[in-house]
Image 1 (cartoon, rainbow, N blue to C red):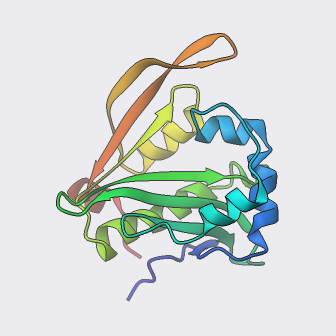
Image 2 (image 1 turned 120 degrees about the horizontal axis):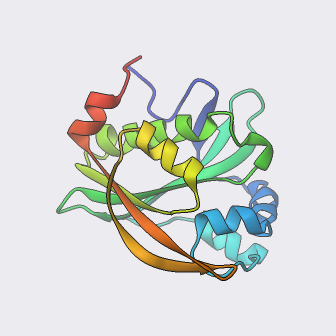
Length: 182
């Protein structure tokens, strides 16, 4: 039986008390936050981070992304806003550790999260939004089989320019057709 939350070089886990330091550093990194959130950049207090790391409730799952070789946290993935009746949920990812960018860890983490969503939670559809300036993320999502479904035109203003927020969706059958078993 394949392990759902384990990739080749990463694994997904719960959060640990010592993760607060790394997550706090990421919350202070303007570039990381502007890729993740439409809200204005605002570093988070330790208490807010601890609260976020806690139990997300019945309609959400949140995991730390850790490197297998040393267990160090490099980011997180979330599956939230689940509508159980319709078997639909939202996904998001953040690789907060900039030294880990461009190494394929995000793809591995998303593959694990999607396997969890479709195999373990029996969801039918997952969706996400991404800002049009985040081309690296769009390439990742498309490589995983996500389909561009529309955009919220000129949704976001950053540094005097307007950007679209793009909606992507992935259905269970599309994911099964795209995934490599192993």
